[in-house]
Image 1 (cartoon, rainbow, N blue to C red):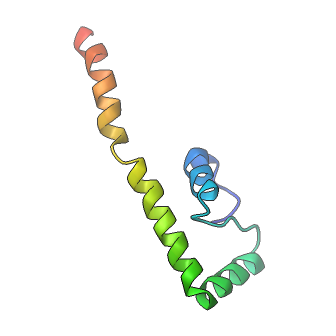
Image 2: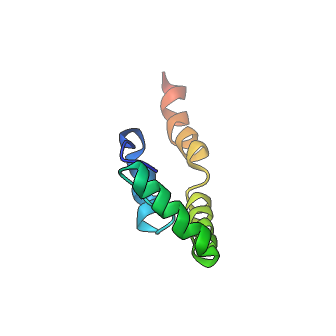
Length: 76
């Protein structure tokens, strides 16, 4: 993904930390990254697995938020 991810700081940080994504700054960097991943199928697959793992580990956020808010909303 590109440099403008300010609306998704936590998500992009998680993916970068897990090496499940790459941040590029320019069109040329994007083309280079895509070429590298197309040439290295094992790395592309590893990144995909890392991304899926990161998403699965964070699944359920909506349910946890509702559970946390429910007592507060019932009082209102």
